[in-house]
Length: 348
Image 1 (cartoon, rainbow, N blue to C red):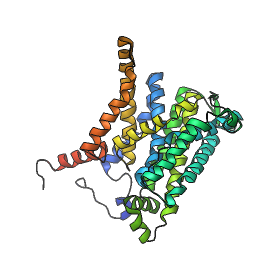
Image 2 (image 1 turned 90 degrees about the vertical axis):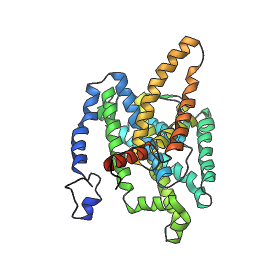
Image 3 (image 1 turned 60 degrees about the vertical axis):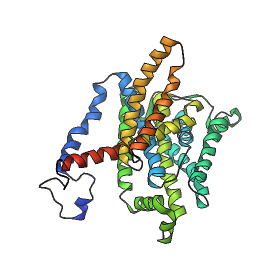
Image 4 (image 1 turned 90 degrees about the horizontal axis):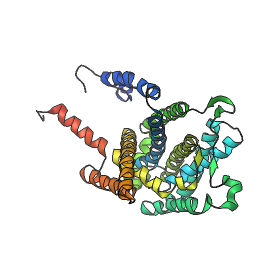
């Protein structure tokens, strides 16, 4: 506890922003991302918008995997459901917010359906059931022209200018998309932070640690696992719809197992089960990936080889190093460094 600060009630002690330094940092730092798009170039704004969208998806994955401990390998499929559902609704003029909400709800419904095997199996086996969903979506459903009456076609273009609700509140510029992604990220980040402090979040943690012990204590394990699938699936579906609107074009090739693994890299790098860790992982991996793509493209032009294939190798090596040094992620490692410096040079 910082010197000179103390709590007189539990509400203050459990607050999200507890210390004066945190309040000052929040007041000074919060306006920066809202001002940034007016000072940065269009390419950087687009990159940050994609990072915000992926952060929403990774926060959804964090609810399922980090909080409840359920391994999900269908991140790409959930985002595809959200993207194609939003595309269908935007085509009829429903508005962006209703389209995102419906896409999220459909993704949540499918997530719950493929989470039903968690009643009998867990761990590796529930991962296989969600991996089946990924292959069904990627290799059959969204590429099947006979099912175009459902998903609207494998390749679709989304309107560049839409209203938030119907024709009201038109959006279309790069800055509009940036601000919308930022606001939705802040909303879902606050929901995730508060979820971890509620009884539901503590129940998820108990199931993650030991579902048998949680069941003995009276927790309905199956119901809460499905609830985690629903919450996480909704967030991932919304991110998928927002991603489709941001790039203005969707194809089944954008939502492959590679996207799932990329989001796993982001979550594991930052720290499993930590909201700030998920945000840190998305930010670092997105920026590093952008710089590496530029360097590898230059190397490919110089040597005439496919140097971009080295990118997954690089991130795979990084994850191995992070898990070997600090299995709880970079954020936990930074926390240990902070505690060390706070007591240095006297360990007592």
